[in-house]
Image (cartoon, rainbow, N blue to C red):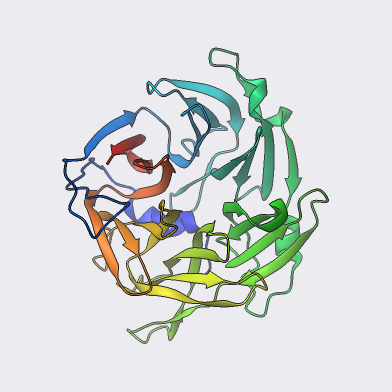
Length: 342
């Protein structure tokens, strides 16, 4: 079944409540945490927050997908005190036939340049953050520079071609090149720094389906990080969402893909801890008909084991580390960002 990632997530468009249980130390799992971590709502009232990026001033830049009923997607700035300012408004926001909202996806800040992905438009937007101060009137999305990546992806002849593109998440690698996971094509796109030249860096392979029907399901890439030596890519399995089968792939600098770890539930994002080990978000438990509320988790994954650190998250979609001990988690359907101080 081919898709945009948002279609997978449309199975849980329902009334949600927030929840967060015990949150042990994400930095050193082998030692007991001496204090109870502080987990608090940081920013609320957002409209489908998807991506989170921090800056040197401790502020958050957040992409909001919108309602799906109007062009009301936006980029927002959240101050360290949790106050939200609109920065760029008017991004297209729509609904899939299944009722899932699509619009802006993830973003990354490098220097003063903020790069934002709009999956369905197939655009990579560029914004100079130094041009905005809290309280300024927001810009319109139509005023931003952008590059058309979707046309390149759709025209590329993959061996297992979905004929779709959904630019979803990104990171930087050697020489400042951007590496972008496409959740429609199940591929990693490389954009060369300076020239903007595009190429297919790697393809994310399907996985066997233990249920046997179909024999294989897609591994939909949702997140990507670079640890200085290799890329790590998180995945969300395709329908019927076989449990404990989601995989983190490692991709070397030549684009060769292998398994880093598996045995996870569907993963929506990946971050690196201070020790360069991946910390991922599991979206929730699939019942065969829907995903359960408050069943999302934070997991520290190594090649030896997966350790669930947090339970009770409500459909978490994005995780961002700031400094050594602070993590931000976006709960898209609650319009909420939570802050955890460890």
